[in-house]
Image (cartoon, rainbow, N blue to C red):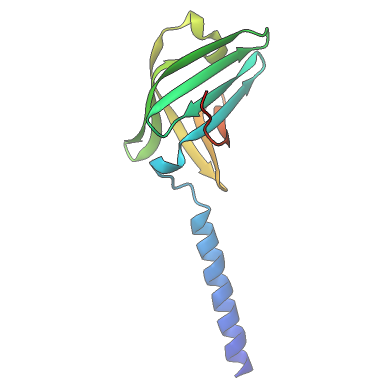
Length: 137
């Protein structure tokens, strides 16, 4: 009887661990994306606010104290089975955006341990990290 109780406890523990691993996976839905994200670089930072209504505001702050604001629309895009965020008229090159055209851009999505990152470039490890709830900026 005691052996069965120990086996049952071990089985329940294993089920709990497997459930946690499944809950901590990188699966993400469109509803989780709205919010504010921050990208930091040596020459400045950006705040990207994805709003639930499908609009976004991106504030680019340079290390020289300059600020530029861009806004347009965004949407969840299940691009070839790999979820992405499509942002229209997005400032390519971040703090150097004035030197580049505004184009539609796909940002890669990674979710790990409940944290969401939107990748501008995987090669350069350049990403926005979800920071705090959306604002009314």
